[in-house]
Image 1 (cartoon, helix red, strand yellow):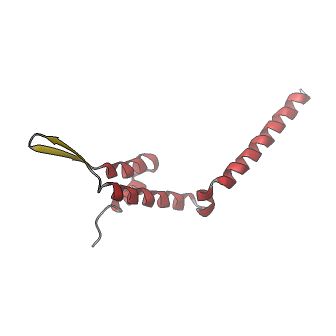
Image 2: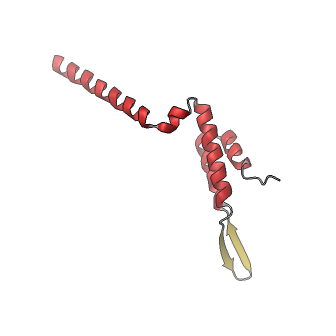
Length: 99
C-alpha cells in the first residue's frame, strides 16, 4: 500500500512539473493574461485572416453562370462555433470595408 501511494505522489509531482513547463513555453498566454482578451485577440486575427483570404476567391464556371466561394467566411464561422456569436460577430465585422 505504501509503495503505491508513493508512486501516485511521484506521478502527480511529475505531472505538475510537466504542466509548469508547458505553461512556460506557451508564449501567447504569457502575453495575454486574461481569457477574454485572449479570445478577442484571436478573433481579431481570424477576422484579418478572413479579410485577406476574401481577395482570393474560388470561381467555378458553369456555362454562362459562375459560382464564387469566399473562403474568408470560414474564419468567423470557426470562431463562432468555438466561442459563441459575440466573438464571431467581432471577427466578421473586421472584414467590412473601411473608407
